[in-house]
Image (cartoon, rainbow, N blue to C red; front, side, top):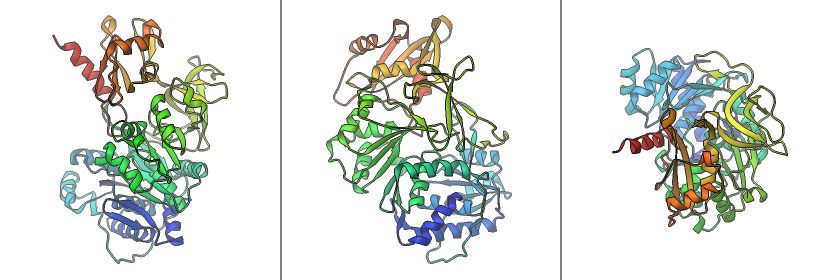
Length: 493
């Protein structure tokens, strides 16, 4: 079944049930279905057809969701671009994917049209109240393109990750099986639509006829407002990067609020969850907690449900075992398959592995994640860190994630990140540590703590206590910003 069919079937079953809720109110399944058909006809008027790409340049909203559904109904692929993205970058992405059209707010059409010229049609996202357009529902195969997610361009030219209907449905169907959602569920949508976490929020909800509650991008890392949102919207399923939950606990007073009876599942992905923070969260709620793992190129390919025993560890919980019908294994540096207790790069093969990068030909065979793991006694995987986070300083190989885990194991530490800066003999290891509210562990105590958990060659040359770690647009730690900060400190006289 194609992705758009999920909404169409839910609308046929219960058209008056709320589908998407946001700051401007709730939209029912029937209204969203009609909105999507309206936009699909607009795109048909622009000549959009099967296999074309359509850029959706919009804030997170019901309108953006309707636009995604409209594009899919034509057998085309959508390319979400955040509404805050400068027009020049929007145009560059549209050119890169050969977009046939752009859907955006009416007031932005002159700007993007001036950039792209008359060969790329542009249309408004606005609904037509009371309209009953003819239904549009192209049947598509699993291997046909559903959407393209562009990776961050902070380290170079953005890459468009091509996700087929089959790729997405393999993950969504698995998530529905694991979570068992029903029409009464209320999914929080924290991630931007440009981030693969949002695939679960939207399509698992539509699969069950549940409602999805959008968190505006400007509130994504506003801790007090997020805590209020969870309670006000009676959220049952939460999915975000750990950083958002950490901020809610640290600055939003989450742990001081009553545990909502509605909350039944907390999912997190995108980065390791410091174990001290996860313990605190587990003490606040009886909801299921699941650690999901996978790069954008595979979506979720492994998962682990947190147990009581996991909370006794001194490092983040495992990323677990294969999910979504995928096959995963660790490959040693000599090319062999890692056995119990051995380390290697995680390799993924299966239905969620991307169709390829736009303009670079189809992807064939297994996908190398670049992430290092250790095989645990039960066959699950412990995440060690990025392969490109393995650095060499003074002849020693150092995994930055291991250094960070040593600091986050301190009871007064909320989060930590390590970076390597400099070259040759001047290369040094720098740790940045953010304390919990009201705590001030001090650099000497942090150094003493880390020396009890790390060999001498892994101890940072510098330790800096800062209010909070900088974040990228998706909420992950901005290591480039930290490296630049460390280099500026070195440059000071």
